[in-house]
Image (cartoon, rainbow, N blue to C red; front, side, top):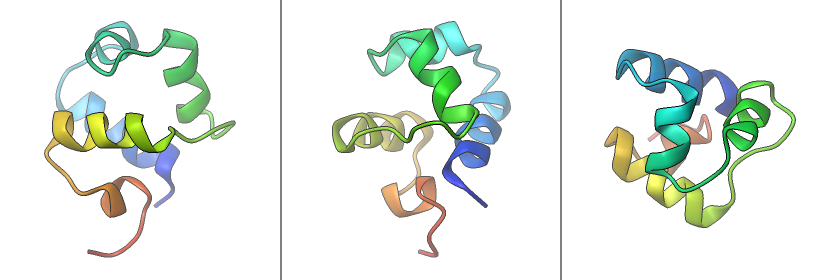
Length: 66
């Protein structure tokens, strides 16, 4: 799986909207949309926040095996 698919899947499983996710990781809704469209990937600091929010490793977010 690619990062875009993983982020989308994790935030849908948590029942979070893009607006709720952007608030939790301190980015814009447009940034979340760009991740989910595969236009960009989160920077390292944001990956750390996403990792904590979703309780998964950064490697998991990047689509790498554990």
